Image (cartoon, rainbow, N blue to C red; front, side, top):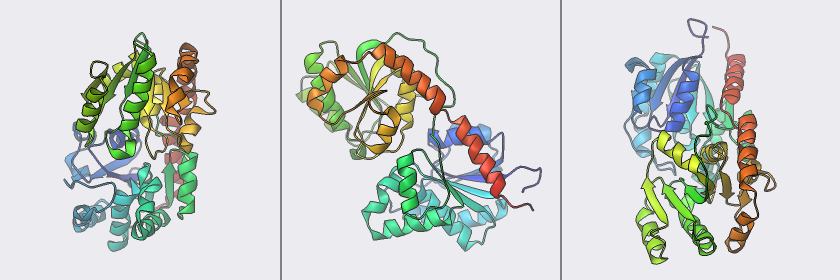
Amino acid sequence: MSLGGGIKLVLIGDGESPHLLKWARALQPRVQLHAISSRGFLPEFLQLLPDARRLALNTSPDHGGGNIALLKQLPRVGAWLADADADWLHAHYLTSHGTLAWAARAGWRLRAQIAGSAWGSDILVTPNQGGAYRWLTKKVLRACAVTTSDSAFMAERMRELGAGEVMTFPFGLETMPKQNAKKQPWLCFANRGLEPIYRPHLVIDAFARIAATQPDARLVVANDGSLRAALEADVAARGLAERVSFVGRLDAQTQAGHYARSTWFLSLPESDSVSVSVLEAMAHGCVPLLSDLPANRELIGDSARGLIVSAPDDLPARMAALDTTRLAATNRDWVAAHGLFEPGVQRFLTRLRELTPPK
């Protein structure tokens, strides 16, 4: 192990992502933490880590692949990692950052082992885009001494692609939110990216059906993306402009307020693992309306904690039949028992310590 008795670990990912920041907050008190970002760093990273422990590559990687600009940074990354002499490289999103960790370790003969954390589309989408992507994903998975998944479904897919040890735990909440707002019975909230993979047009379609039967129904659409203008035009064409609000990207506190007031949360992506947004919504007592995906069924059970939206025509009637007050309490209790981040981080670090050879 590193001097001082603690594991020296390098996070490799998108330093502008609040999800990587959450990992950094959890790890920083317990390891000698360094970080490499394919982009820049959020301001809180600058407070967590001194300049010497951060490397910003300032590229714009495409999580769908084609990250030539990122790979061109490999000599810089390899030299920086050789100097850091870490015990572990912890790569987040395997297609891009996992590839960088694997290539640097091989090219610079680093002693560090690789831990890879899958985020969803890197396992559930990218390997299906062609033989080269599938080959690369397999190479990265096999190079990892341990990997993490946030759903049993994705963990099984990782094993099919060649992963060895896979630890499964939710990328959950750091703390449970307080209940500090009154629910509005027909207020709906959606905050996934306004990009094709998240199918926000289906959210609008589902809400239009709800609105047709519920005069008080309202929808708040947070986040942003390439489809925003088309979605706003669609809403206007349906005559729903007064009932649908597009509010863009939100800070955590503002978003928490929307969760707290909303009774319903819509998330209808084409592909997904266990979504942090869905866990956040459930922790705030929202009832999730989800696309029919294995990981979503893991989250809500057999409609015990929400609804799978497979036939939008009958959605308003199914919603009206639910006891949303009871489900709010059920969902909060379930997240408190199964959806917190801390227990998973503890298990992960225990395993890394077991796998780290003494120096």
